[in-house]
Image 1 (cartoon, rainbow over the protein chains, first blue to last red):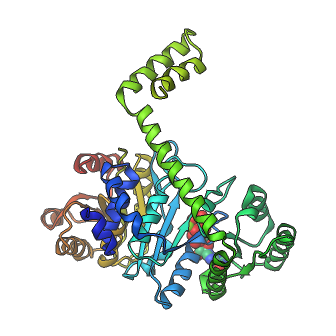
Image 2: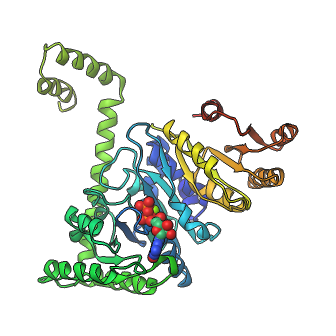
Length: 313
Length: 131
Ligand SMILES: Nc1nc2c(ncn2[C@@H]2O[C@H](COP(=O)(O)OP(=O)(O)OP(=O)(O)O)[C@@H](O)[C@H]2O)c(=O)[nH]1
Ligand SMILES: [Mg+2]
């Protein structure tokens, strides 16, 4: 077996971290190891946490993790923050709220930039879930970038999706309009210490009534004060309940297949993009075509036919 | 391949200001790097553990109080103990001139005083991180 793959299976942190980097950078060393570890995955329950910016997602993850650790579960955390489209750099600050987990050997945290992906995730997130799963984590928590418009891709990868809202109508209702209603398996109204909680809970409950009227399972709405570890056991219970529901209703198989579909599509997409845009023989051709489009010697559609014609023989 | 330089900005010790650290973090982000920011009051053990999980190329330590010598070298010692040789360690803050050679000897590759332009730090990182 590939050495780094073997060490990942043993749960060795430095190998886990390095393989994640290889996957993230599109390094050839990644695919070899990724091919081997897949056969040791599938056990971890993947929980996505999305919601309004600054809603307390990181703080909640810290508290949820501490609760799972009390039950002896090993936890992997993927914390995603936006990459600047201008510089390509990123400020990854979610760990600030998870400091007390740093020295716990049963917890592995990785911060990631979106690196140009829209939808609130990053392209390598599928790889990272596989790596953490193979390394023996029982629970994988993914923090997406805050919801602004349509950052709902987390459902492609999560078994259970938590949507975090806060009291005060503006942002939360905006988020619901943007499509988080449909993706939530559990709603969390965090910062329940703030005024207006009960009104927000009532609002969300009535939306859930509409959404779930003809569904088997009603999406629960939970109040939490993450900062004070208040309501967290209820969150854990609801995650466990949803996990059971997935298994009984067979929805689990559907979700997992959707995840692998998204992963497969992503691998193919990345390879094709690299092939077309990074291989030098095409790169030069593309630059030439751009000049020709500019000089009105060719139209963009015919230019695209030329490039694709070389691949789709 | 699309490797990005990853930097951990950490503040060991007990002083309560991270303005300088945040300015540097922002500058490095604007230079295209991924900056992991962990907040105040980090122990050497926490810094090294975070650096491992995040697989960073650089650890930037920032300090305002006079206790830099031991806090900085605690980090480099721990890295050595764990046989980690591919992370470079930088120190910034109020550091007396006469301490700089000693810090460099202890494995703090770059030392940057209060007046340092962030461009200097960026250039130093580009020069010293092998891609
Ligand atoms: N009042 C109150 N504040 C909270 C609560 N939970 C978290 N906070 C605070 O809300 C702020 C944002 O918390 P984070 O956990 O960083 O929120 P986030 O959703 O991860 O933020 P982004 O990742 O930046 O979108 C912090 O100052 C927290 O201390 C809560 O239950 N009540
Ligand atoms: Mg956060």
